[in-house]
Image (cartoon, rainbow, N blue to C red; front, top):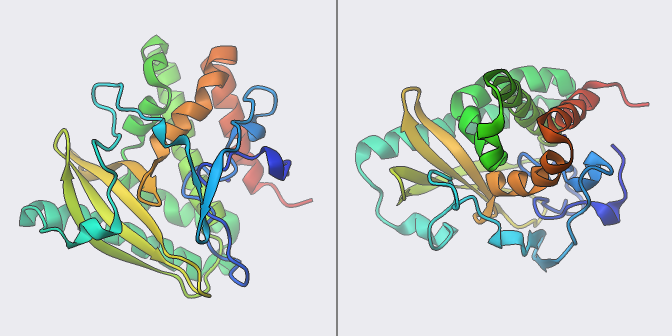
Length: 274
């Protein structure tokens, strides 16, 4: 997504690998991208966690991007698997948003099944187009730096969006690195604030491991329905986590340090293992 001290990792966006199943993603976008991976720039967040089944769940759920006017944080209660039993919204939105996620999941699953043959670079190339089609990376990149975005020049904004997008692709290529019978299921959707939808999905895992909720907040723009946030375990906002993670870096070194640090993490994944 470097070898780091296990006790210094940010645990807020990790899924614990169950024994006997080595091909389960340990996070969605941000696995191993926490403060420890940015060295002295980002000090590790205290590891205050609780364990539920096979998942490590953070208590940092209070972090929210809802302070921004159009931030993609959930409104009151986070979507849960039970919410999938609620009636679907209008047919047009149901078929559109859910179809986008279904297509994305299909590419992920195909990549997982070919993971060893493709290698990291092959997986990167395979998943990159569907990420750029499915995710509104420009919106997400802007929200991860918060109010700092308005201080950036047009050139800096473009470079950060590109860096964030490549890092997102890289995380998926690195984490979804094998297949041992997993499957994805789209459960349904529910309406959310500011004309958005939450598409509810499950990652079914094997070997007795607990399934993982991966819920996608989506809005419709000129490109169609696109993801603007992902909630791991149905609750943990990817955008909020990244924003909290990047804040200290921006304060201490500005956008140049953040771009350099994130770009290096992406590049290091492509380097041959020593």
